[in-house]
Amino acid sequence: MDFDNSRIRRQDRVMEKEESSALLSKGEYGVLSMQDEDGDGGGYGIPVNYAWDNGKSIYIHCAPEGKKLRAIAKNNRVSFCVVGETRVLPARFTTEFKSIILDCTADTGLPAAERLNALKLLIEKYSPGLLEKGLEYAEKSFDRTEIIRLDIKRWSGKCKKQVLPG
Image 1 (tube, one colour):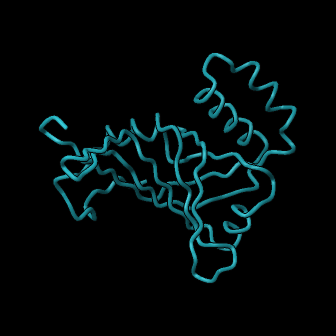
Image 2 (spheres, rainbow, N blue to C red):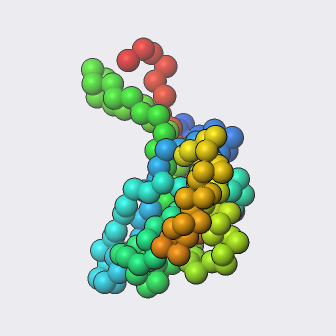
């Protein structure tokens, strides 16, 4: 997993690894983008909840069938984007932002133990303090839940911060 800001055109807007990692850890949602399942060159992007394992993988839950899974089965190279804090500055015709872009491969059909651990990560992130109840819920719907693991190959962070008040 390479953190690499060298490809960002505006080098004055790079976000360092620590701040990028914080956004990946705390981000509310991300947008999973992939090639459309029809393979006609079109794209397909969808906002999703996710959990990061603080290593090289991101986990997403979904139904055991659907467009995301069909698209991934055709081409498992995907992009994942998380946008953090934003603030539109109308009088300055600009927007402050933080974002990260991740180049990943997507895998499904994971072992049961890994799927359960992914659900635990999601519960800890989105329902803090409710782990026991969340795991009970997850066990009841386990057979109706698929987990997609995104293995991060390369990622970068970018931000725009205004020095003067908006």
